[in-house]
Length: 114
Image 1 (cartoon, helix red, strand yellow):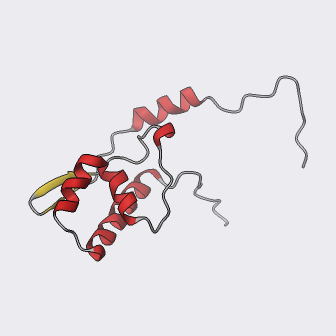
Image 2 (image 1 turned 30 degrees about the vertical axis):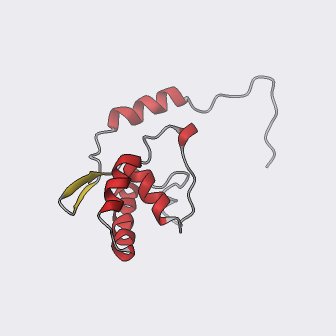
Image 3 (image 1 turned 90 degrees about the horizontal axis):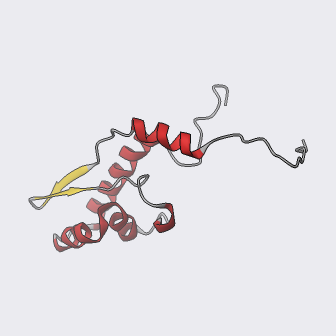
């Protein structure tokens, strides 16, 4: 189906209003965990500045952990010498927590019949 081209296209959404709506609902607690007697708090990946967002490959475990923890906490975390399998399991929990809370960007819930 072709779309109709006009000189003044219809405005379908207002990002300012959408942002206000999302910000008003944002009372989600950040994911935190302890390791080696230190408490770490993961940054909400959806609160970051789009211009500073980093696209990471799924297999970039260290990059993803650093993105969640930020540089300072990442260094403290790495000083504790985590094992790969432990860090991978933790990362999965962090990702599950935020995706259950916010969903996955760019994906809708689908139709009830799909």
